[in-house]
Length: 269
Length: 195
Image (tube, rainbow over all chains, first blue to last red; front, side, top):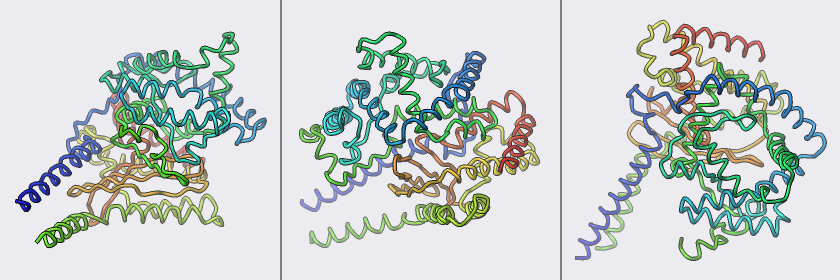
């Protein structure tokens, strides 16, 4: 009797492992491994390519003649650690967007992580200037936005869109950005339009000043940067929507176990 | 009786895991270590580093497979001579792209997270860890030429080969095969002159 239970458990276990890992494996490989060459090379529809290329060209000029020089000046004025803190501050402030979308996707664990990070970083991190939640407890930010939420519920991109200043997007993701802006606390501070834009500019410049010339690299190396960025955008967003297939989650708090500090783990979510 | 069964179970599990195990990940580790070995030599000039890395990486990559997959459907419709020209240019484009990044290296290590193997295919999940960022990098490998070789690298969910396939495919549809080769040729020359 015992033996029988044991054997059935064992095979059950094998089948379970087998099926889980097979799905996972095949999903991760996708069509890449099949020698079938008829793999769709179109990653995203682009009916407005002429318009998009125009916007892309304008953005490119804005980047090299406005945003990049501004970032260079910014680097001279403010040392790196200070810029990191400014970036942390904006990131912390945008928590409602990430937490809200985690909730909409029923990702309670991510919601818990974001809530936890907000509490720790706003208090111990002095209003979000520092990120002890990650640097001390090893709990990482969970990037979620409304475009991803729509994607999770089966909405496709619609078509590719290059937005002025913002850059690569799509019908779905641009809608997402608009919806997310309602969860952005900065919107509810009483700011004049010019001031609001100034704050957004600072946010963007901070990120740019910390970047390592990714865009320059792409422009330098690819035959057609427009196509390369479009493909990378489509792939990146797909990966973000179906995050679990590739994402790495290394909760390794040097002082605490990150999971221990996540209240949602206490109740077994 | 139970003990024997349990023992057997462990033996079996162990056998299963060791049967599939070490080669593909060990191969990636060897490649990464040999690249880092060059990058971390502070007495080498950038040009010397490039030359050394380029020589060392080749054996770990399955270039024919990378070229073929990059062209996808267009591979079959190209003549053998065109295929050869494409492969030669593609190696140079990849080299130019990645060797130019060598100067950006400022420390960082690689953590190996997971290895999955199925028949002659393998996926290795790693993450590059440096002071301020962590970049997930996935290696897709095939067993061929008596060794595990990388044929695609997926960085933060973006597959290198898919990216090239998508953009090159569109260029071929617009400018034809020769048009693509001409553009690649021009790019390679620009890269070489700037190196």
